[in-house]
Image (cartoon, rainbow, N blue to C red; front, side, top):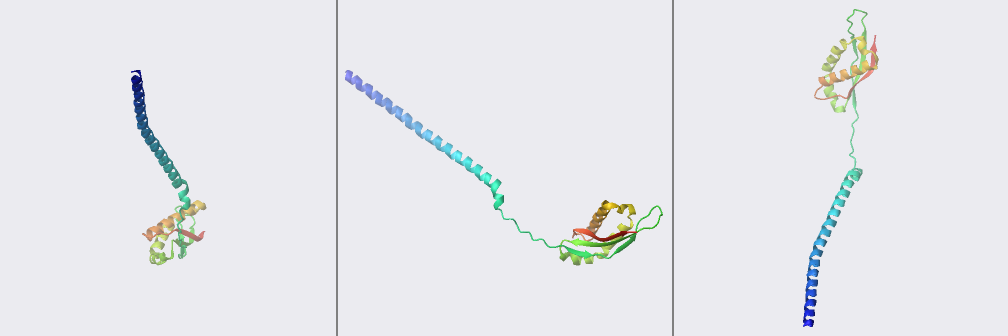
Amino acid sequence: MAAKAKKTDDEDDVEASDDGAESTEATQPKSRLKLILIVVGAVAVLGGGGGGAYFVFFRHQEAKPEVVVVKPPAFVDLPEVLVNLSNPSGERTQYLKVKIVLELPDSTMQPQVQNTMPRVMDAFQTYLRELRPSDLEGSAGLYRLKEELTRRVNVAIAPSRINAVLFKEIVVQ
């Protein structure tokens, strides 16, 4: 009987070890699944971070710069303008003599500017006659004159635009 009891104890141990093996086998797939998920997640995070860093830091170096073809500007000479300046105090009359060149973005605008030349010259004459000699003093005065003439030309030839008004000669007498 003792042998039988011993057998049952061994059977219980085998059964107990079978239960332990089953629980170990059951935990192994769960732990392997967790391990695989952690590894896949880590690879995804590192891959995403590496890809993002590549696009941020290195992609702009591989981009080929666009070739921009710059057309040379065209220039149109205007007739010489001679006007008397405004003199409210009644002092000696002073005159302004100006030779102006218009800078156009390209040469295709020259016919349009030539067609509107009377309007441009009228805008110049009316503006220049209202200037006082003190308006033309110093580089700031000439800069303001240049900007105002550019604005008036652009209004006269709208919807087209010029780049700048350039002075070839400017004399105040």
